[in-house]
Amino acid sequence: MLSTLAAYQPERIKQFDVRFSKPVFPGETLVVEMWADGGTISWRAGVKERPGIIALNNGLCRLDG
Image 1 (spheres, rainbow, N blue to C red):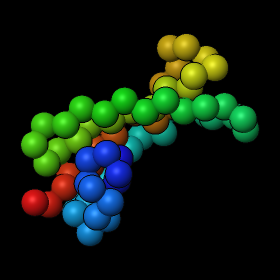
Image 2 (image 1 turned 90 degrees about the vertical axis):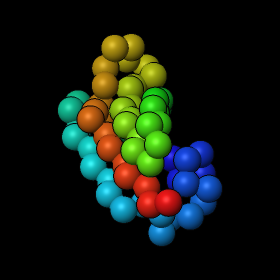
Image 3 (image 1 turned 135 degrees about the vertical axis):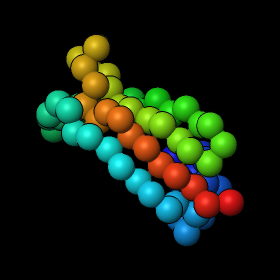
């Protein structure tokens, strides 16, 4: 997210929230999906090895500028 939407500028991140909704086990791969609406990015992360499982949900990142 930092590289993709904030151009490697961590000072632009003003708010970062997420809900842990399922466990992730060692060795599993997280696949992150992001949607941008101006300076607000919504996101979630699913577990590649367990299709349909969303481990991190309701992610929100607000950027400044």
